[in-house]
Structure formats: C-alpha cells, structure tokens
Image 1 (cartoon, rainbow, N blue to C red):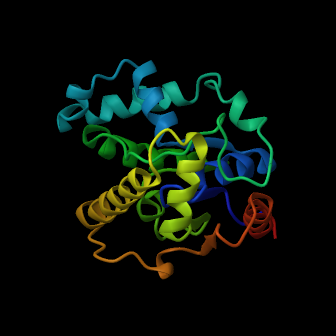
Image 2 (image 1 turned 60 degrees about the vertical axis):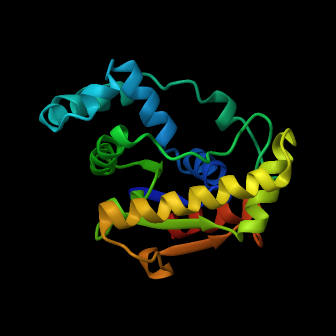
Length: 218
C-alpha cells in the first residue's frame, strides 16, 4: 500500500462525506471530517473563545488529538450505510456550512497531526492543501456540477424551494474559495492541486469508492 492517508476535499452536495466513510470502511482506516473534529473539540472541553487565542494552540491541539483517539464516537449509522444508488439519504446528511472561523486553524493543525499517525481518511475543508507535498497522502477532489449538487440537497427533505438550496451551494462555494485564498494563497482551485478528481454526476458511489480504494492499494 503506497498511501497511508486518503485526503478528500469536496464541494457541498458532491457526496464526499459518503464516499469518504465507505473508503475508510473498505481500507480499515479511521474516518475524520470537520464535524468529527469539531465534536472532538467539544468532548475535549475546548471553548470557542479560547480556540481563537493563538497562545493556547499547542495545549488545545493536544487535548483535541486525545479526544480523537479515544474510543470511536458515534459513527455506526455512517459505517453501516450502504450504496443505494443515491449520494444522500435521510440518515446521512450532506455538509454545507464550513466550520466556524475560530475552529479552522485548529482543524488545520489537527489534520497534519492525524496524517502523521497514518491509516486515516480525512474529509475536511481544504485538507488536501494542508497536506500538499506529502508522498504518502492521496489527495482526492469529489465534485459535481452546481445544478446536480443543488438538486441532491433538495431531494434530501424538500422542505424548502430548490432555489434556496441553490443559494446555499453558491454561498458554500464562495466560502470555500475565500478559505483557499486566505489560508493557502490559492486564488483559483485547479485539478492539478489533486491526485485524483472524481465527478459524482457521472460515477455511482460504489464506482467512486472503488476508484479510490484501487488507487490506494495498487
């Protein structure tokens, strides 16, 4: 196995979360995403106001990593979910909102530490950029056209008009672009920032998962 870490960056509504969870299960890797790391910060008793203070970053990171390596948090519903031909279900909801500003730096540092430990699938905001240049990291972008992603989000519950989900996707894309420029000086995201780009408009979940697993284990 040439890769010890799979890093998945994803556009909102593209299905990167679902692909990442199933890849982790197939490879026997631990799964991490923004939500998991944010939950761990709560378990570690990290207050958002304290996170914003740079002088506490080292101790906070240690507490966060300790929380992450404790017995697995509730993920059974994710890992028992199987390919139904859909990228989202009522049990596995998509992530649209980025992590809060005060958690971003801490998450970025946690990503680097998690990668150093290996055997991990990391689905986190711009994680591929944080781990650029590491030879044992497979950097994957999971994406799809905006119209496809908007429709998927609407199909989950149909509580709001589809145009509301279109606005949510557009704002998420803008926020993602701002984040890449602010923290990594990337003015325009490109396919060359990744080792593998998967368009989930064309690939089923099982095809996307198989592509990544085959690349890792080849």
